[in-house]
Image 1: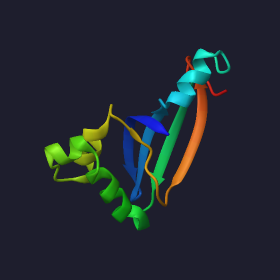
Image 2: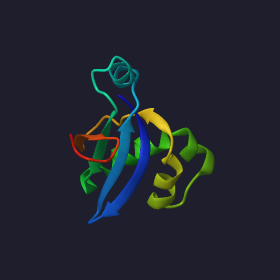
Image 3: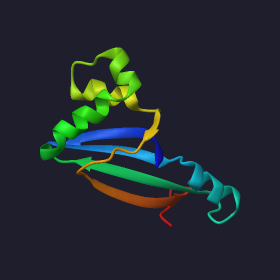
Image 4: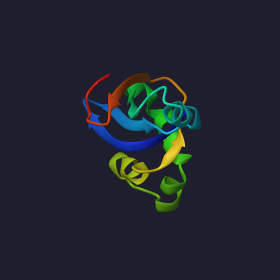
Length: 105
């Protein structure tokens, strides 16, 4: 799935990465009217045991490689607004669908 990173949060040693599904399959469904004006939001939660994978995934992002950030926050700020393949690994994924007014569907 291709996602656009829209934000992040670090709380209680957990990293939350928020995004929107911008995959071609999802866009086709919207265009065909099966999902009229609905955006699919995703949230990835990385627990402390997954920091090695999160570090690996972040280092694969071009903006992170180009800027060479010094902190987790700097690295996560670099990827906001980018389109990327969703991370694959050990984490929790929460998917929820909102209409354009921000109401759950």
